[in-house]
Image 1 (cartoon, rainbow, N blue to C red):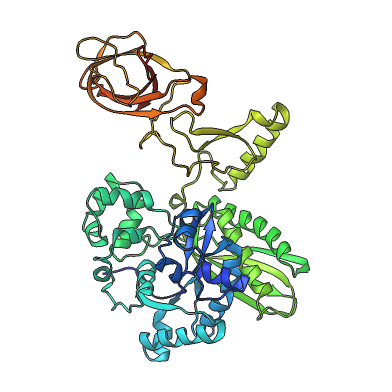
Image 2 (cartoon, rainbow, N blue to C red; image 1 turned 90 degrees about the vertical axis):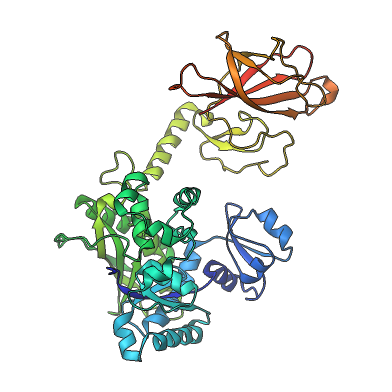
Length: 525
């Protein structure tokens, strides 16, 4: 029996693209995509028909669809323009909760009983959103937010108590919903042969808890048609709400953004002091004219201070900029935790009791102070960029400068195949690579080894038997006229000293020629 509430989810397909097109005034039917970090985060149906997909690079997307309209990812814009959709749903049903821009959830039982059933309610909401907001949407009903969301993507009304049966044949990739970042877990489950939600749900919960990462327990509950977490069975403190009043009414978006950050930090700190985290947040605004606006945001993962501030800012911006805006400025804001979970559900950083994800911002300010004392090149961060060898692919970027790859998408002939070495020595370590008769292994100018390697001695140590090898990969010099010889790289697996030590995998390199000087360029764990 499912412990998940019966929910109706209304989904606006490709909402980031719809919102971007509405803001830019582009034709709705034109192929378009929204990019973040030069990769596609959302695209329209017409763009998908041309071969554009999520995660694709901008150059690849435009080569597949030359007429593609390009938009930049702006979460504030998506949230602001979604407010009319939420208001249209709220006009017909109570308890509307915004999951994220493009997705709202409604408790279905009361509204369905009033309007004559779930199918009648779904049809009414689709028509209402189209009439009041001018947006196409799909509706799904199921037990629990996860099941209802997948039902909405298929425009399905799942019978009560049958959500687990509905989920069972669906792909395990459905666990990786936007904002939940379960890509690594999904890849792991696929490698184990668990390719459907039903196959994952069939595992015993204690086996999942003992053998998989922590988030797998939540994912396992979702695959079984249950709620994300068991209900919190403890009395809640009465002082979890946070209220802020303003002498001067808030009328501008920039004022609301400043207030949202402070309010989010206070709200998060109050919950953290009680060992709690919020998964449903009610934002209440009272205007100078006495009007009250309320919006509830439902979140799959517990809110941090930053994500709380984002939702407050988005909601205030939606209220202050839509056609149905209040007649006066906001004089009071209140945050109410509608649903909380134990604080262990929120993965905090080391030493972050009472802190939040904004620790990164504070760390950034500290690094800037260090640069002021020691110079701009004293603090650097690594960036994986283009190149052929493991060391040359790493660029060190001074803190504060743009972290943009310069040449990662070039062909790079002779580049090593994945995976890359996990350890790169700061200086090349000499190695002696011999064939079966004891001669030094040479690489010809045609990119072929004279004889396969038989033993390798590293740094003057004892020779080890080669269990396997791959390569060579030849890199030709950028300026051949200078007389520099090509460079050859090979991968070798060496026999360990004992069975417990395991084998040793190395990346070796040497110049092509008659007297090669082999060195160790990298080690594989």
